[in-house]
Length: 56
Image 1 (cartoon, rainbow, N blue to C red):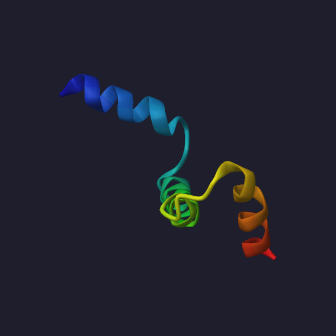
Image 2: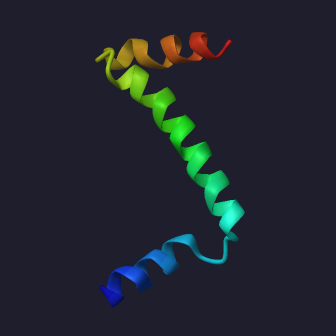
């Protein structure tokens, strides 16, 4: 269990608790965005254009 705690501290580095919470929120938002396209199972040749159009 001590090794897991050490690893957790190394992963977050010197981020404050509020910075950690913000990072989690941002990464979750990005994950949802990317996952929606992943689930579409798009072909590689169309992927970039489709995602780019979604952003604009």
